[in-house]
Length: 188
Image 1 (cartoon, rainbow, N blue to C red):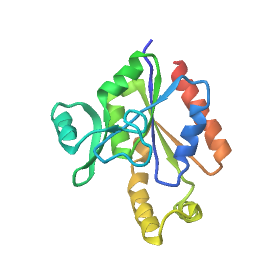
Image 2: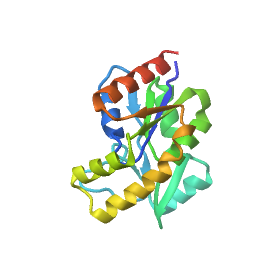
Image 3: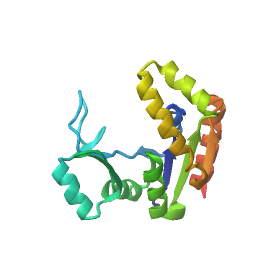
């Protein structure tokens, strides 16, 4: 039996990665979608594990051949995208594929797969709480935090286009709610 697709999008700092990591530990037969990129590997990153590493030329050729579900040129010659062939291989193997993508990419994947995909938006309880979380991480400069908050406003405007919205005002509750949503989707 073919697997299903679970798409997650959210502003930075909303808890999306934590919720995804929680789901990956549950017995849901999940496989994480590995993205393609044209950037060079960092540290110990391996092709096919963290990313599929392609040259900018290879990436452009694959775009021309319509090999991506979604893709974006983040800045000149730096592409990110989801390869159709990778996802189809996972689905054919009966895996349920989980995505961590931006809102536009997530909605594109949802449109492509229709009812086989569930699009979940993880929403912070407020912009002010999001600001506190981003500052609390201690990883970004004030300028980067402001950019993330500006982008969050844009991303939040897409929430109503997703199948489900989970408000992460309590992480334990948000994990349990998301697990329930995913379990019900997979069971149908």
